[in-house]
Length: 178
Image (cartoon, rainbow, N blue to C red; front, side, top):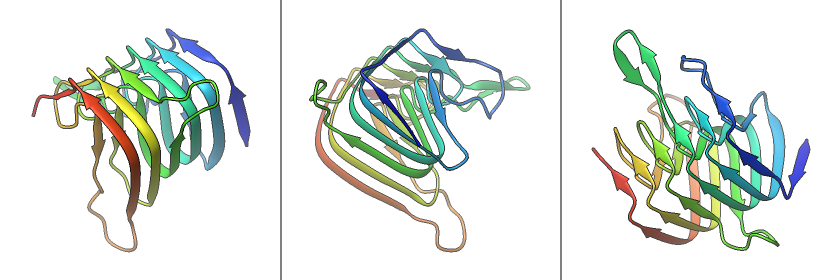
């Protein structure tokens, strides 16, 4: 269990060219729990989750500004793959996005995903997503769906679900190319 308060993450990179390169600034994995309070993420880069990746665990964000983050994807032979979640990649676990005390409006601006979810991407199972408020502006998914936000369940067998609860959304100028 960890908490990070009033932090700025700028220019961080996780760029190893394979499918398992997550989170340019932060990656939550192995069942870990992280709370971020009033944090700024600018110009970070990773294969998946340009700024932040929730691979397996619990991530609570109370106030975020994310801009200019990029999910680059990776090269598999001659094909470019991955590149999901320009700012945030959500895998298995619990993701909560609330207003913060200093950052009272969660904003995602000009983040880019090589594939899906220009700002936020979720395509897994057994995931709970709660978003209190979010503003998505000029985010782009260059190779797939969800210029601002992409949420889709993975086809599996058994009791695998995604639960999504989204409050207030303001979306302007987001672009998905497919």
